[in-house]
Amino acid sequence: MSATSIDIPNAPYWQAASTRMGETVTGVLDIAQSIGTIFRTQPGTVPLMPRFGFDALSALDKPLREGARKLERMALEAFYWEPRAEALSVKASFIDDTTALLLLIWRPVGAAEAIAQVVSV
Image (cartoon, rainbow, N blue to C red):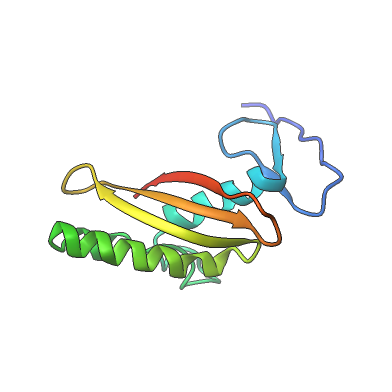
């Protein structure tokens, strides 16, 4: 395995792209990737930030409607971890007993246009 160099962008916020080796994301793509990371991280798994993440498992053992409402409520609260975005709405729907999709509508702070992002939990 060889190391790949990353061209560091001249941007205030950036991170390595999670799906493309050697590339970076900035701007709205950086925020969207951060939001995805929040929703894929189980609280307690980041040693220095034990509350970081989204506890989807706590909603999966509930009846479907109750579980969906709990996911929606928790998703709105999870935007706390990404201060560059403000949540506008969340809609949860279950695919099966163990998988839910969240439709997140958010916008970068100070922006006029909203972003739709789907996250599987």
